[in-house]
Structure formats: structure tokens, C-alpha cells
Amino acid sequence: MIEPPASVSPPAPAASGPGQQAAPGLPVRPRTGRVLVLAGAFVCAACGLVYELELVALASSLMGDSVTQTSVVLSLMVFAMGAGSLGAKRLRPYAVAGFGAVEAALALVGGCSGMGLYAVFAWGDGCGWESGPHWLLVLCSLTIGVLTGAEVPLLMVLIQRVRRQDAGTAVADLFAADYVGALVGGLAFPFLLLPLLGQLTGALLTGAVNALAGGALALGLLRRDMSPRSRRVLLVVTVLVLVLLATAATLADDFERAARRAVYGDDIRIALHTDVEEVVLTGGPRGPLKLFLDGRLRVRSRDEPRYHSALVTPAACGPLARVLVLGGDDGLAAGTALRRAGVHSVDVVALDPGVVRLARTDPALSALNERAFRDPRVHVATDDPFDRLRHLRRRYDLIVSDLPGPGGTASTKYYSQEFYGLVRRALAPGGRFVVRAGRSGAPDRAFWTVDATLRAAGLTTTPYRAGRWGFVLAAHGPGGPKGVGGPGGWGPGVRSVAGARPAGTVPSTLVHPRYGG
Image 1 (cartoon, rainbow, N blue to C red):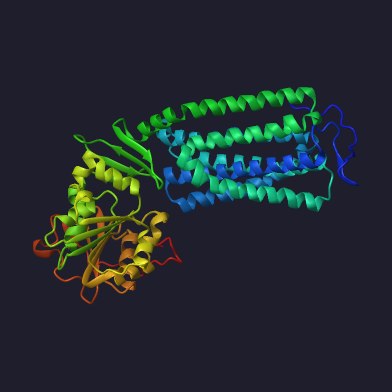
Image 2 (cartoon, rainbow, N blue to C red):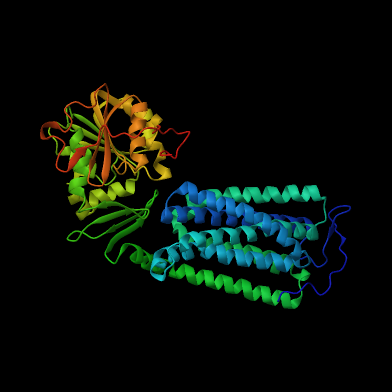
């Protein structure tokens, strides 16, 4: 139990200026003490934003739909910060000890939130917690928000105890330190913590820094404002939090491997974090190969002979000298295009150079793509396809979109009217464009929205399906692509679904990114 200080004498005038007062027994000058409190506010604000971004990044990776996860985390945390600020009023008589306890709790919850979310996602289904990750995300967002909201009122009390000053000036100084700290934390997460340490270890290290900063202010600078018993309790709590975080950090790699096995199975061959996403390759070279990008199945070897053949073959009508593949980091679309006669060059605009390296060097994956990235006709560039099309000067006979599917908000712009307008400009006379559009059934509004968006961009379309996959083939001019499917027709298992367009389907634009209604 944290007690209020045994006795607090009226503050004595500080030597630093008229009308400025400081608590007796301060180990430094009031001006220096004020700077130290503002530095503590800076560090705590940076840590708080790291926790927020870490939750958003991990939830988006595990559960998809980054817009929804970001909205949930931000809205809940802002709401909870207001509640935390109100609740902090009860801690004002114990401001120093209360601040130290709040920072210790925030360090533990924020630092371990990533591991907890990953654990529930990996093992929750087996325990009957199918919706566990969603509820844990809500709980962590609320808890971190409440604790973060309690910081500023308590820091306001601390800065006034260190050096009495005008309330408006104190608020301005404190908020400036808080906002600058948030800026540093927001930049440190993607450019420092994530690439060097990863999500889990980065969050644990942030928690340790948070606990040290809170403990330094409470147990170092303002220790005379606490009773001896409160100091002992807070010291034990802070040390215990640091030990727990350090233990979790040493076990983070083993934990992550165990969680991956629970999610992807025991035959994981490669698991790595690129600058863009988490990449997991399972199976192969003798077993079934699967490639997962950020937890979503991207390639399954048993589906490949049908899927990429259905994507490329119907579009292989007319000239094929110049081919552009948008996406296709795994090399499978490029390999399928290279099998067609008359192909002189294939330009690939890849999203992730790490996946390209894997597709070039891994024996099983390179065998599946027929070593496409070693063919001298293939030229790979890592860029955003939207930007590449905007500055493109060449024209292509065939453009293949092998980008992430239209169900995720991160890839929405690749299914917009603006994007297809750039594709139309990049097509040579008589050129064709083909894109996967989700499922091909009439209830799938996304499929027909892609078709409507292509037509709104000035292209004529021929929708078709192969099994559970839906595609749309587009070209310039009336009547759709001529000679669809080439000499061999559509190909095995491929059927046109033209003429089945439902009424009322509207095109997608960047202004309305969630296409499909």
C-alpha cells in the first residue's frame, strides 16, 4: 500500500528567482529539477506512442484490415486517456508515488501487450477464445489509454512541486515536452525499433525505458516527497517490472518461434521480417509449399498450376513482346508469362525485395516459379506500382496485376478508378490487362465492383472465373479483348461470366476506398 508522505513542509522560496518555490530537500537546483521533470514527460510520451503503434502494427498483421485496427486502437485510447485524467485527481495527494506506480504499470502492460496479443492469436482457438485477440486488443487499448491519461495531471503536480510557476507556463512546457516526445516515439518505432529489434522485443525494451524513467523521477528526484514505506514499495514494484520485462525479452525469440509453429504448423522452413512484412515459408522441397505474408496465405504449391495459368493464359492473345507484372514478388506470374511464345521482356514491379530474394534463392520456391528471376528477359524493380505507373513512359502489350487481393484496405488503391486509368495509359494499342477480382459469384459485390471500375476507367472488360477465383480481363476499344484465350481458348476450367453484371454496382475511387459498398 502506497502511503502519502509522512510530512510535507510548506515549500520554501527557490534561489532561482522571485516568487518561485521548490520542495525542501530537492537534490538539484529547481531549474535543473524542472528540466528533469520535462525530460521524464518527454520519455514517457515517446513510450506511450510506441505502445500505441505497436498495438496497431501487430493487430493489423494478425487480424488484417489496418484501417479498422487503427481506428479501434486510436479511438479507445483517446477515450481512455480522458478517463485516466479524471481518475488521476484522486492520486494528487500521492502524486510522486502515484506517478511512479502508474509508470510501472504502464511499462508492464505496454511492454507485454504484444506478446499477449500474439499468444491469444496463436493459441486462442484451441482454448475456445476465437474472438480473444479482438477483446484483448480492446482491453490493452483501454488500459494503456487510462494509464497514459493519468500521466499529465500527475506530472503537472510534480513540476509545480519542483519549481512553482504560472499554471499557463507550466502547462505549455509540459505539453511541449509531451508532444515532442510523441514525435520521437512515432519516428523511432518504424525506423529504429521495428527493423532492429522487431515488434515484441522493441515493445519490451520500450517498457524497460518507461519504468526506468518513472522510477528515476519518483525514487531519485522527488524521493523526499514519499514516506519510507512508499519508497520501499515503489522500489520493489519497479525492480519487479524490470525483471519481468528482461525475462520476457530473453524468451521473446523462443516465444515467437513457438507461436509461429502454432499458427503455421511444424514444417516452417523460413521465417523472417523484411522491411515490409513478416514472411513465412512452410513445406517444400518435397512437401506442399506455402508462402504466408503477414499471416495471409499467398502461395500454395498445389494451387499454382491452376491459379497463375488462369490469370495469364486468357490474356495471352495478340502481341506479347512486352509484359508488365505488377506485384508478383514470388515470381510465379513472371514464370507463367515466360512460357508463352513471343515474350521478349518481362518487367516486374515488386512490393517487397525480401520476397524477391527468397523467390530467387530458395530451391523450392524458385523451382515453383521456374527460376523466373534468373531469366535475362526479366527485369525487377522495387517500387509502389501506383507511383511506377504514374511516371511510366513505356507501353506494354500485357499488364498482369498480381497484387494483394481486393479484400484488404492496404491494397485498396490498386483497385481504384485512378489506378486503372494509369494502367490504360500504359497499355499499347491492342494491349490487355488482367486482374484478380476476388470470387466470381453473384453475391460477391467486390468482384463486380472491380469490373465496374475498369469500365469507368475507359476499358472494355470480360469477367471470367476459374474454380473459386474470379478475374477480369480488360482492353482498349469496344467489344472486349479480341481472340480471348488465344489459340487454346480460355484454358482448362476457365469460364466466362460476361453478361451477369448485377445492377447498381458503382466503381471504386480513392475518395471511397472501401469499394464494394
